[in-house]
Image (cartoon, one colour):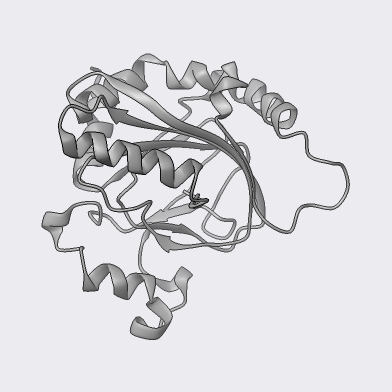
Length: 227
């Protein structure tokens, strides 16, 4: 594992998120064309709400080049310490804000790899995170998480005022995060996002149960957060 991949793995363990600059730069133009092909959105007015295409990897071999890359394998190997599998993928046309949330708090770690086809900034819908909130041993379970989710009522803050870390990105960057970490996006209009989720091959009963529940939450229940 290179120094960069080791640093990414360490950031994921400690903070719950990392940005890998220009990791998808070589295929970003191909990904843009593939997104437009797969989504096949009608011309004219922009949609008023999010549009999602599930299982994007089956129709986008261009995204598979990222999912199968050596650096993704190295990061997943370091985090899961075993073989891993891609459990979900999606293409999203995102519209508006995403409120503070985690993608369900699991005992089993899941990683989500996200890239945007447009630049994202503090004022245009960049992902933001609360460092360390993926770890139960950091005291985030229970009231601290509830206070963040109820930020207006409990903290007197608008969502964009919660002091998280904003991870701005350029086309070609990849953002990876533990899906337990609290994250959101604010002030954004329309932006194109591609993503896939990975998990270590489940061994224990808890891991098998969490993996089934995670899959069902994304594909069956309609619980598909912006992150």
